[in-house]
Amino acid sequence: MVNFHEILKTFYTLGCEDDALCYGACRVYIHLQEEKHMHDVQYTYEKQLQLFYLTARKEPDGPIDLFIPSLTINALNLVQLKQCRETITLPDGQKPASIVLAICDGSSTVLLYRMTLGLKEIAQKLPSKGKLLRMRTGTGCEQAPK
Image (tube, helix red, strand yellow):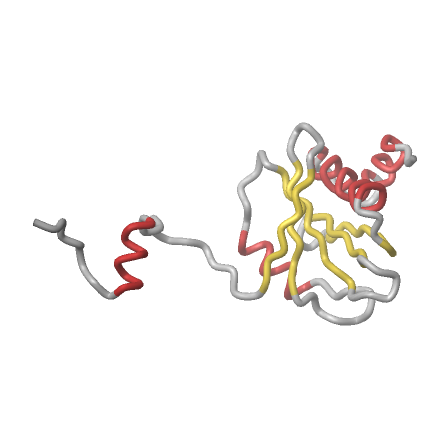
């Protein structure tokens, strides 16, 4: 088992001044290594973007995934995620095909969500389920039988 506090000290030495971000990135690192048993888990602090990112493989010779730690107490910054995809180069020299958002909460739970190219913010309220069904069938409002 890894020593959380020793790893956390290492994260602080990388230049990040955000304690919560260091904690979250450390928690994701341990989650990927100890709980998901991923291979080649590496962490980096990107000063230009002011964020940690991690890379890992599910299989020893599998593709490299990019993991971005995010805390439940912070709003998700889609502009920053787009910059991550454009700026970060994976250890194999490739750009990431997708980003795995690693959401950490206060209970040490880590949820992993894979996001692909084309993620956009929703500018308006989503339509209701009933409206979506009516749009799909091409009709307006259904009238009750008499």
